[in-house]
Length: 111
Image 1 (cartoon, rainbow, N blue to C red):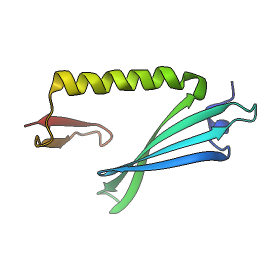
Image 2: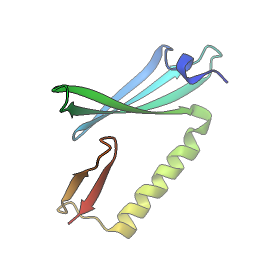
Image 3: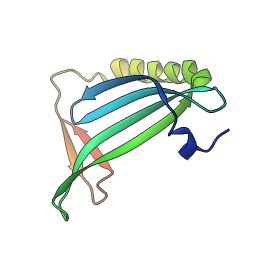
Image 4: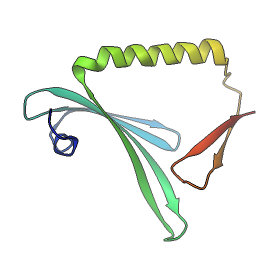
């Protein structure tokens, strides 16, 4: 298997952008040098650095080979089903983000 740093620089075969509030998700299918397809899911969030007074983008990435995609989707479906059946969150419920000392972490409280 190739090193992740080398894989990320491959050509994009397909790309889908999804905006969700303050976050943007990129779904990119790429091809490795060994002709294996993989999916990179990137979460990008615009943040403000109070020390420098500038905005920047914090990104998180998940690399997933396409032969693992069905198991990944199955897990997502199970999470969605559990959230809708057991958590019973309704559209009118509000949530509040609480900043922590580590700006990469945040807690969510449902009212």
